Image 1: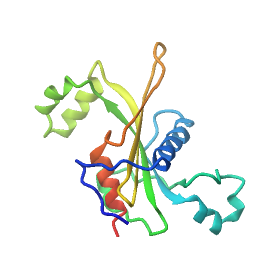
Image 2: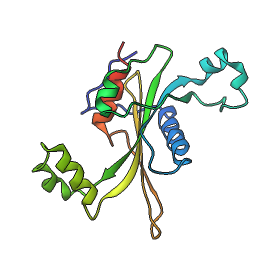
Image 3: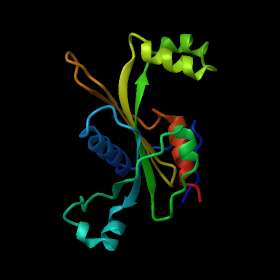
Image 4: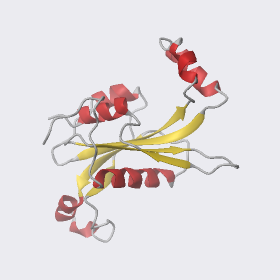
Length: 182
């Protein structure tokens, strides 16, 4: 196992991690919008099948990793919740799906002046005329790999858009890597 990279230098991931991040996003999307954050353990499919062979007809046996939904997260600050999670060695990684608001780049200057006032920041984001609702899935592995999938919510005139890149959420992926610490 390698060390965890810093938020400034995310590692590219093997094809298995982006695929499982997309799988998590598809799973969460099937239930629609307006959902609470959801956490998933990422376990090697072969290990899961060795322990529970009766799952063979329910899993993609060719997949390297299988996401396993966890109990609902407590309704508290997400950073605080993640700070208290430590995964057992059998878990190779984890993924978090959460809904967020995306603002246009020019809103950052305006937002910078309110950064210290959390309530004001949330109100600004909620009321911004060009905000976009989105679902972000961030996935990480113990080897430092990261993958992110962002679904921008569409409307009657525009379909949903999907963006994939390992650097979409460096603070979140760093927090998820910390849950995998030994």
